[in-house]
Length: 140
Image 1: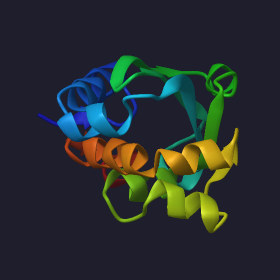
Image 2: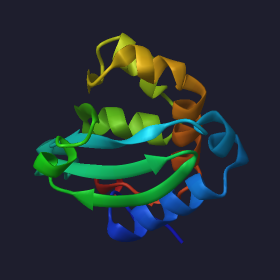
Image 3: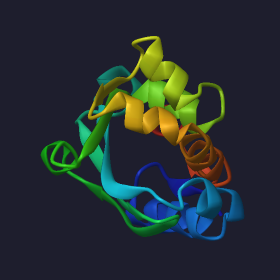
């Protein structure tokens, strides 16, 4: 079953993938913090409004993953912002989020050196998203 991109059902499936990943559990064992993903609107791709994903990540576990408003996502300790098409590339394994930040394709608000220490955890989060089947709005 494929999920609508960034729906509550997608968020639950993403959370489940994170929590069953031994790689993430180990790589993020000392991580404490919230992460907001801001997906910027691309009306020409059937994404008319900005949206957010809020992740509460704590010592290798996803305590919460849910869709939210852009404003609520921007209140997280770490915020990564990018256009819908960039996030789609991340979710399909076509772009690494950390490299996207370094190349300026995604924007980070938060302490980059701390994030770099958790590159393996970040890569595994991306890997977890690739395991969630998605109905993309621009492929409908």
